[in-house]
Image 1 (cartoon, chains in turn red, brown):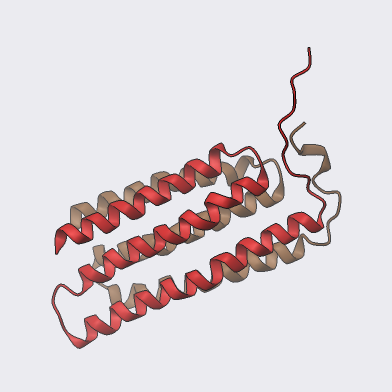
Image 2 (spheres, each protein chain N blue to C red):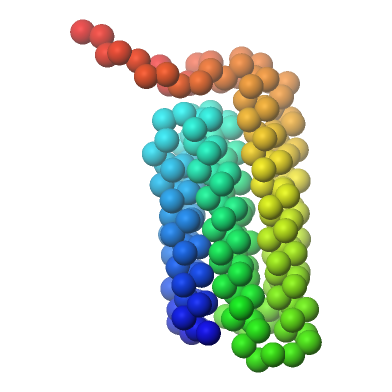
Length: 107
Length: 95
C-alpha cells in the first residue's frame, strides 16, 4: 500500500516539476500558459489521490468521508483550473498582446 | 512515511521558487498572474501535506478547499480587471 502512495506522490512531484520548468523556459505568455494550465491540474490529481489512499490506511467511516472530501477538491480544481486559464487568455487577447514568432537575427 | 511527506513538501517549496521567479520578474502583468496561479495550485497540496504532518487532516482539508476557492476567485477577478487596460503591455514585450 505504501508503494502505491509513494508512486503517486513522486508522479505528482514530477508533473509539478514539468510545469515549473515550462513556466520558466517557454518564450511567450500564451505558450507559458500551456504547462501552467495542464501539468498543475494533473499534479494535483496525482498527489491528492496518493494522500487519499494513505488516509484510508486505518479504515473507518470518517476516513472514507475525509478521502471523499479530498476528491471533492480535485473535482473543483478540474472545474476551476481551465476556467482560470481561459480567463487569463481572454484578458491577453482583449489587451492586444501579440503572440511570439521566431525572428531572424539581423547582421 | 512522515519523513517522506516532509521531503515531498520541501520539493514542492523548491518548485514554488520557480513560479515565484515568474511572478516577480515576468515581462507582462499576465505572466505574473500565471506565476501566482501556479503557486496557489501548489499550495493546496502543501496544505494537505501539512495536515498529515500535524495529524489534523480533518481540519486542514477544509482549509485546502477554501484556499482553492479563494485562488480561483482571485485569478478570475484579476484577469477581469485587466480586460480594460489596453496598450499596457506594449513597451515591455519581447523586443
